[in-house]
Amino acid sequence: MSDANRYVYTVNESLPIEILVFEMAAEHVDEFIRIDHDVWTLGEAFSDGLSRILFVSKEVWLDGSRPGEVTIVFVWESMAAWQTVGNEALQQRLLTEFDARFTHPYTMVRAPHDDSNAAIHRVSRFERCD
Image (cartoon, rainbow, N blue to C red):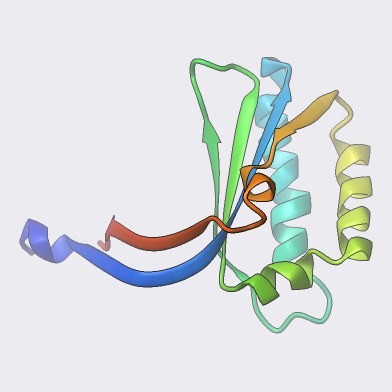
């Protein structure tokens, strides 16, 4: 397979992006990521009443120059999908569960999607497909 055939370029997307940036003590980052996956990722992916997972992807980013900072990026299939799992009762239930399991202090320091009124969208991507 040639290198050119190992990649796909997708254009004309309009997928809403949710970005959350958290800070905590650096020694708790791995635990935060593990519990976030167990509670938030799986909780939103497999919420009662959903026939499928409503987000396209979720990534967790770490910046080596900022120990203790965790950036979470969701790509949602639509604003309607994002709003479905954004209902207050589900969010409160997941937050309560997360806080019961992750007992260390943490703060959400930024939510750039909020600053833009959820106007951040993925419009193209170039990725390896092998």
